[in-house]
Amino acid sequence: MISGSLRGPDNAGKTVVLRVDGFPFGTGIKDAATTKTDAKGDYTFTRRPPRNTAFQAVADTGAAYGLAVSPAVFVKVRIRMGLRVSDATPRVGQLVRFRGQACPAHDGLLVKIQRKTRTGTFRTVRRTRLRAATRCSVYRRAFRIYRDGTYRATSDDADHGRGFSRTRFLNTPR
Image (cartoon, rainbow, N blue to C red; front, top):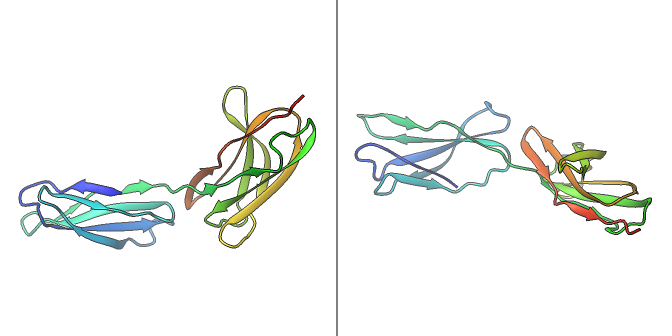
């Protein structure tokens, strides 16, 4: 939701245009929506951008004041990542298959499978690439698990912010 307030006298019922510039930036700003201000000069737009996007509101305040232009607001849209494992309770040294998807499709993009360290940060333990599928891109990677750990998958691209899967705890009973 994008909202704002038009300041100054006689601000009710003014037309506000929402301009968008989606990634790649600078290739063309387009008018995406139009609304009118309410009695207090407030306006609201509801938008769900498909990729990283810059938004800007422009209002015609009349002949005396001209155009009112808001500063650009950049909205990052994350890649939606999923993660599944073949066995959440593997034996020590057992091969576990990690698989998942990334939406929207980003075929060929690097996926990092990460393990949580003792300090709470995540460290990349394996890498793989996204492959084409029906609507989203998919990945899979198998490797041996030797101890308990919390894992996640992550990926990013210029047109989307970094996406993270939910974490999965793998418990290796001893």
